Image (cartoon, rainbow, N blue to C red; front, side, top):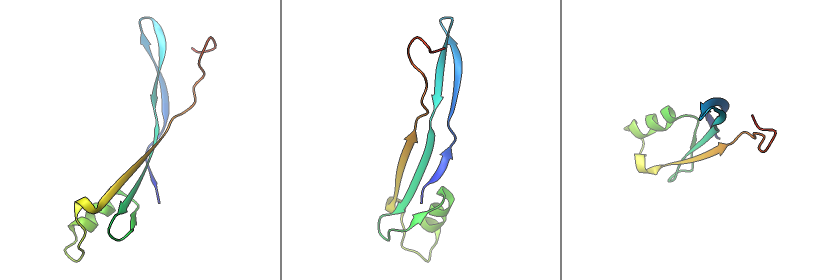
Length: 80
């Protein structure tokens, strides 16, 4: 199951006297053990599995999928 790593936000910054949108996307991460198929709920949980002497999990077994969700902003003459 994916977990949210970063909240989305839009801020405006001045560039050459104009307000320009600075967009930070919402970031969702899915961590999966490629050997067992286990999904982790956080980076810490995956790291704990790698560091656990009772498992065969290695760092290279952890796959990180990242999904970026970009907020819609108005474009064109109606833009800020």
